[in-house]
Length: 113
Image (cartoon, rainbow, N blue to C red; front, side, top):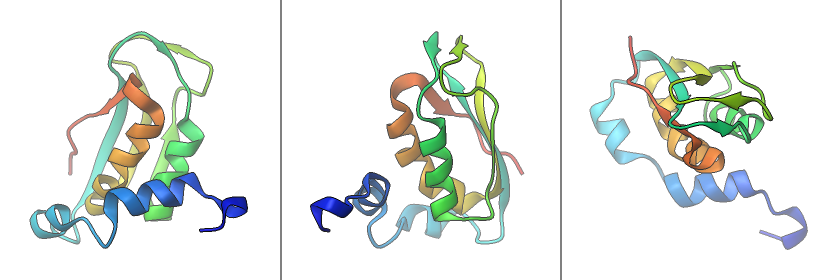
């Protein structure tokens, strides 16, 4: 990758997923759809939602990403920041990288059918 064209999202996805997410592909049925939410673990100021949304969409453009708390907004523990709907495998593949860009602010709730 040329330094003038460095894409931190592509680099992070390559580092985390590489040639695939073997665990997700083995244990999660391909057709399974899910809802998920990213929520605050502690009081914070939201930052990185646009980057997180882009990560989910790079893995699967059909993932519905709803940013409920925009960057710069104060949240408390338990506040939902982002809601997701789509293929469970896609959400699981993207979530770790998305959370890395959101830092320690958030966690992913249990996926539901």
